[in-house]
Amino acid sequence: MASEAEKAWKRRNLAKGESALESLVAWDYRVVQFSEYHFRVNERLDVWPSSKKWFDTKTGRKGDYEELVSFVKGYLK
Image (cartoon, rainbow, N blue to C red; front, side, top):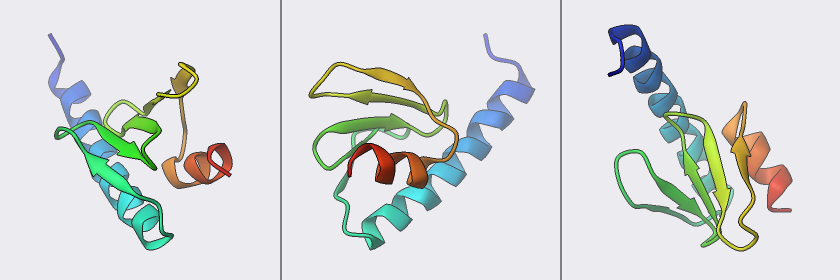
């Protein structure tokens, strides 16, 4: 079970991620929310801001990212 510190870390990451996703929408990326923690960008890239994980639905590749907007812009260019 997650400790209070881990839960607080995930909440902070989620808040930062939601702000980053709003920025992506402003840059004309399409963002769909599947759950509180799961989003899809441009019908291809699944991201989980609370854990900073990603999954490419087209290629099956997955991994971690540091900063969401820079990652998405670089990955989906």
